[in-house]
Amino acid sequence: MILRSILGIAVLTAVLWLFSSNKKAINWWMVLKGLGLQLILALCVLKVPGVSWAFEKFSLAAVTLLDFTREGSMFLFGSLITDENPDGEKIGLAYIFAFQVLPTVIFFSAVTSLLYYFGILQKVVKAMAWVMQKTLRLSGAESLAAAGNIFIGQTEAPLLVKPYIAKMSRSELLSLMAGGMATIAGGVLAAYIGYLGGDDPERQLFFAKHLLTASVLSAPAALISAKILLPETEDVEEVAEISSQDMGSNALDAISNGTTEGVKLAVNVGAMLLVFTALVYGVNYLFVEGIGSWTGLNAWAADFTNGRYDSFSLQFIMGAILSPIAWILGVPPEDLLLVGQLLGEKTILNEFYAYVTLTDMKNAGLFASERSITLSTYMLCGFANIASIGIQIGGIGTIAPSRRKDLSELSIKALIAGTVASLYTAAIVGLMI
Image 1 (tube, rainbow, N blue to C red):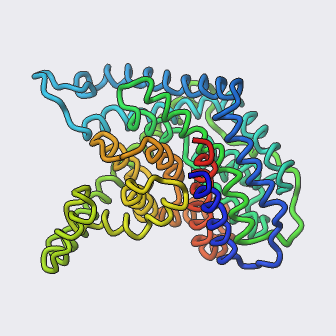
Image 2 (image 1 turned 135 degrees about the vertical axis):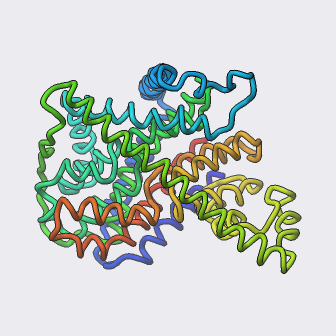
């Protein structure tokens, strides 16, 4: 497994080199330092007792906040958020998602807004940015944005460096976009913890620790991926200050603003899942009822997977195409198709859809190894999907209209960098579990 993870890191680096715009200008020393930083962070969080203990306490705080959300949801929705309805019948995952998971997005958005108002979030972001800047010798603006993406979304993090975006080099701009693709926002992070962990506090803590670790490790991974794809050849500013952002006139105003943004995000997530689920079923109708039924591929797929897939579906096709990536990252052979499917769903649809599928697979006992579940958690932890291209062009383009053309031209590279960053993180963690 360790050798496969090492092979995975080498293959991912080769893929980035292949798509690089300036292969001769790549700073391989910076790349090695970036991978070393990832390895050190992973060792500290997962293996060093003191750091691991502190990270677990931080994860426990996130889980405790989930309990607070549950109390608020209980007040508003009552028995709708419990495991059983008033007649004692088990309810479906749809109820849990709608009345337990989405409310956490709203609550955590409000908490994030409050932390920003009091200046706590800025201090943490600046400290992490300082580490990445000094280690990798990057510009202040791209380091700040990368650190900010650990906690806030891909359209909010650029606001931290709003005054600098118009003058950023193309390499810096790609780093900004890749950081947004490779990490996830705090609000949806909390939703994943609640959904993947269910009602079991220990499982919630397990996923909280790994999701937080994934978001932290993927920040430097996004930077080195961007710098391989588009090396820096211009002079850049080494120092940058966090842009002041109006979060409200007082604490209550900040909470109100954060709640409003959280509602928008929750509705957006729910709407995307509704649309993408319907589209997947539509495509599967063509594959299963059409091609699979006419050619006998449905029966072949069921036989080939020993019943794990019952038809020649889109999920089976994505699993078959992307299973080699799962293999080089150290996923056990029995679970390659499942993890390949998850990677495909994350890239073509979005990570939220993929995490819902991961939960369904986990609850159904389809995985042969816990290692597969853990590595999947890391692989999926990022906004790198096709829809994010439009989100970034629209969001960052609104902040700096003069860079819209550059954003469009760099969008595919940002998608590649963000995807590879999450896979880098999974490979690094695969060395230790």
